[in-house]
Image (cartoon, rainbow, N blue to C red; front, side, top):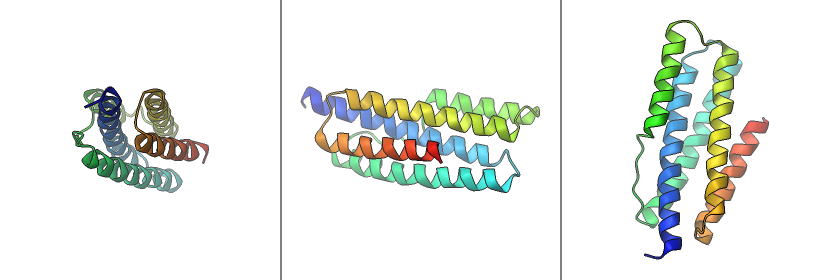
Length: 140
């Protein structure tokens, strides 16, 4: 396996986990609000992330990358932190949205980092497309 292919595999594996973190986080966030507009926005984000996850998992299979849909330890810890804040009444709709935005910024930065690596053309196209979708959702 060439260095370029190894970097591609590593980035695909990382982004697969981060998309799982995003979906899991949004699943938790949507339970923390009763506001219909916020619920609709979060459900749209879940659908968008699931679509991105399907694309990247399909690509991961093509390049024999490991597919881990459990997410990262840091993502799991953050999700537990969100649940704890909600349990003690510290989560307002604004706080939930702030966490969503912070998660989007983190994910976008990981795509941008991946695009700096020596990755395959096909991976670059996929990462650029998905990064642009994250950026679009942040602008909505």
